[in-house]
Image 1 (cartoon, rainbow, N blue to C red):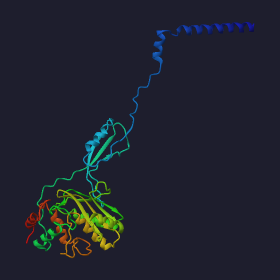
Image 2 (image 1 turned 90 degrees about the vertical axis):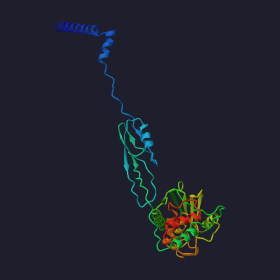
Image 3 (image 1 turned 180 degrees about the vertical axis):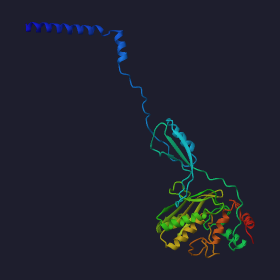
Image 4 (image 1 turned 30 degrees about the vertical axis):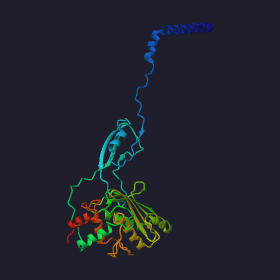
Length: 343
């Protein structure tokens, strides 16, 4: 009896499974219905916008007024950068290296930029243009007009090693002087040069002198040379080896555009100080020596002054007065100086 019941149950279960399978197969769509079903049941494809590819800044530091060029270079990235501008004052330090009108950037060049980043461009604020002023009267420091004029004609209007065919005419620098020092220098050497540069830059009408850290842009080279090398260089430039220093300049028309100073480094401190002062100042356009004032830097004999005298400074100050123009003759210079000086 139990066996018969078990067989009937098995047959019933088999029929039930067959019926359920046929039912499921009949309800599954085919053809177009299947495609429609799949369209509604498949997972949607992600549609999120991919992140923009980061780019690194290509802006570099420029010398001069290059703010427009810098901005254009950043904008060429086409990243929707927010570019702003900011002026800044250059604060001078003990270094006399000229930074120029430096363009800077924040973030720094080489850092990664993303869309929408804020980029700040920095540029040096230009110095305000000062209205022209009448030059102050000459302080004659106790010297008479005749003494000053005579010494000016002797030291400025003539040159110790001049070999040109044209007459001696007034010559001076009209462009900024960019000075580079090379050779084996000491801290005392550099401190004295910096002190002299600062003093020269205080002279009204002077075109300015600054110390550079590279020779490529310099138009005045000061070379410190050991004994044998100095002798060879002095013979080449002035044809005289019996010196401790020399100064020479090249001019176009009546204006200097290049100069060179040679200084023997194998001399004592006191003598070297005097040579540094004399040769750099002479390279400003005072190329002749004289026996008139034994304490002057421009004394023809041997002396070792440690700073220019009042008369020495008068020569530089007068040379760079705007009333004295390059190309003037002695007669023209004399007439101008008589109008500037008091008897």
